[in-house]
Image (cartoon, rainbow, N blue to C red):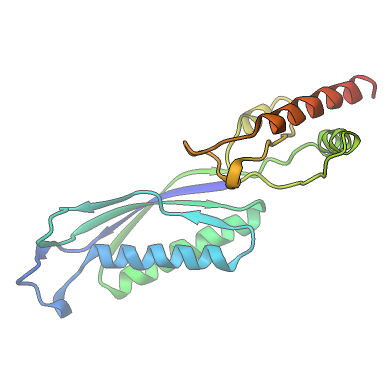
Length: 198
């Protein structure tokens, strides 16, 4: 599952040369502290991934203390309760950090998507096809959104992944070997045969 948020830290812009350090309300420092807390939280809970993928700094000048910073937050975990609890901890932490630095914080939730489980029957069928063709079965949760999420409202779903060079996916450097694509085609063909005769 996935939760997405936008957080805006509002401090006070001021000239970099005239505002003393002890009087600054630097929104970027508060946001940076939050970004590090996101990384720490994600490394603490197995299966959790959390990303700050966007940062907008205002006014964005080299000689001005940042007065406003907006960041994105994407939190994912295979377990819904774990994901929701982690997101809550992160948002509470952001509020605490902002308050300590006399920064106003505005948090807006963009979306929340529950985990979509694959059909045990379809997973078992794909696993059987993989084994019958002499390959090891590796089961893993997908942290990315796929068409299977939308299709799950209509029918049972499962996914068969083709390994990518270096484990890189959703990136221009993503690459697969032709032989691995051939294995996937054979596995799908065998799985369809198994389903047709079930």
